[in-house]
Image (cartoon, rainbow, N blue to C red; front, side):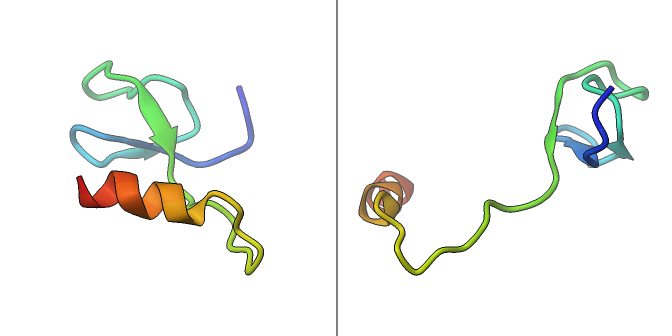
Length: 51
């Protein structure tokens, strides 16, 4: 078990577990990526987001 708060993508339940205790689906980390002014891949992420 990790110490990071995770969120279920289906029912938006917060947990510390890798799987959701309510529905059993996998969870993802609830925090956004760290911001950097020197983001070398920002251009590619924005292009992928616009598709």
